[in-house]
Length: 75
Image 1: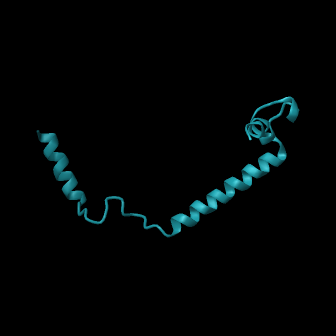
Image 2: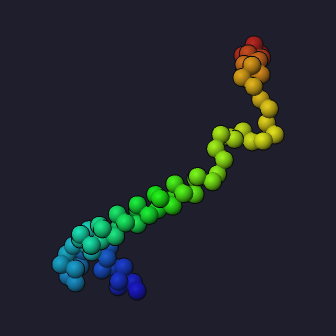
Image 3: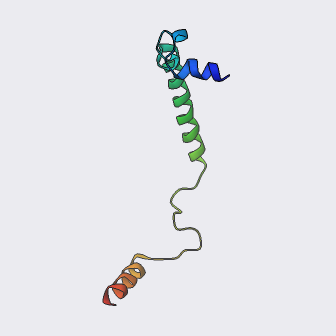
């Protein structure tokens, strides 16, 4: 198994001094893997609620933030 990884990722005489990962077949496999991963991430984020950065129980407003900042500045 280690020899297989070495053949794929390191230049050796068995792969003509070019790692198999940069041959056209290896680049095609990497491209397909990357595209599949991107689609999986896109599908996973479709069902997650966005915009709830501060959480459900937080009720902070911009005026409250400004008041707190000004209080810190005055100190």
